[in-house]
Length: 250
Image (cartoon, rainbow, N blue to C red; front, side):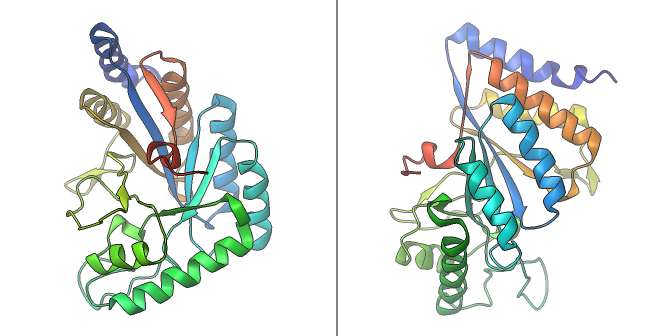
């Protein structure tokens, strides 16, 4: 398959937006900052070359001080945005699906972990750490939302299929496309990824694309860069980031 064929549905969706005189905001959220620093650097270099903003959800207990300093310097150039991704990306549920902030944990325990993670990111990243929270595995409970509100967070970013929560003034800005999505346990190929992005662009609202640098191979990285470049160059797209979408001061 040509490296451009998989993007044909995306181009068609963008052309349809142009015919209707509509635009779409698009953001990229990469999870698991603190894992595989070399892979993260490769991804960020591609986005910087394309001139496209990217949000990185950083695991407080995983990130090294040297990595945090490098990320904070890069964030100062304007395209990289950083926020909190749980505390340690650890599953606390005794059975079933993985949750770090799941139903077996009280609001008080969740509050303590979120507060601890926020303090660490504030120490390591300073003002580059934004008041945004992405729960590991995109799963959290009402207690999580209550703790985030009490701690002064302004944005919760999960997957668009997540069960609704009473978030009050806490804004939700979900991702709509998982780059590593699966069908019946089989990972999507590039054609399916293109169709999923195109489908999201046809819907009103924001298109959010979720990445995981630590499991991205060279072919996938090239495809992600190709998609980012296409979106950045198209007049019907406004590439943006979570804080801007939620009107949060960066």
